[in-house]
Amino acid sequence: METLTKVKLTEEDKELLLDVVLKQRYASELVSCELTDIETGQKNCEENRIRQLNHLLLRLHKAGV
Image: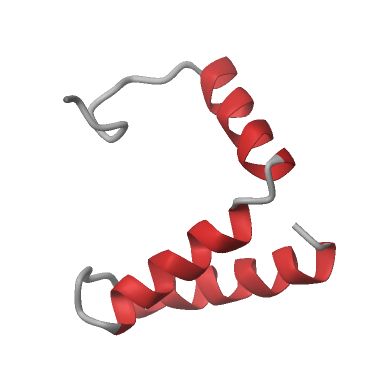
């Protein structure tokens, strides 16, 4: 099975996917899971990305998404 990281999405596809994620209220959960994976060592990333994810999570929580 091909993962989304290997699938070339059009801009329209990306917008549609984002719309669905936000409308289904999965955005906060996805960002939170990503941060948990980083904190537990399951994923590696740079400090800047961690700061960006934390900032995004705060904004999503404030927006109720």
